[in-house]
Structures are given as C-alpha cells and as structure tokens.
Length: 76
Image 1 (cartoon, rainbow, N blue to C red):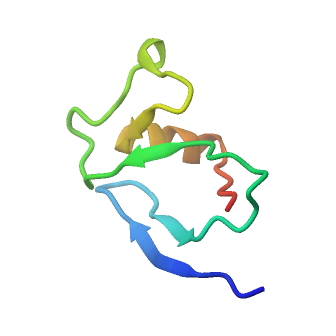
Image 2: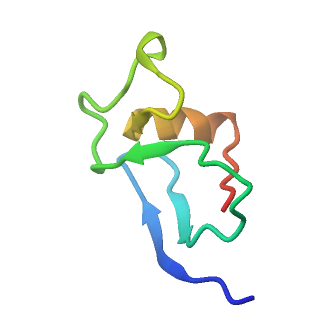
C-alpha cells in the first residue's frame, strides 16, 4: 500500500517550539478522526475553552499548543 501524502507542514508561533504536521489520506477505515483543528498561525483569540469543546468539534491554534505540551500523537 502506498500512502497519499497531502502535505507536510511546520507550524511555528512566536516564542513556541514548532509543531511538525504530516497530512495523509486515511488508510484504515476502522479508525476515526480524533481531533480537527482550524489553524491560522496566531494565538490571539485562537482557543476553544474546555467547557465548549464537543466531541468531533473543531479546535484552534492554542488548543493544538496545549496538546503538544501534553505530548501530541498524530494518527492517520
């Protein structure tokens, strides 16, 4: 099987360690999407508060940074 790669990106924000992302076609139909992010490259007004996070909801830039601090695993 050959994976279809849509893009390889580095998200870097001021004073924060860069996050490296690899976007690939979903190969395993049995797995579900864990997180969806709307990334703009800013930290100003870019957070979804934990009380507003819904299952399958879209998160923002600061949420990604918080996950990265906890240790982020990307599953495709």
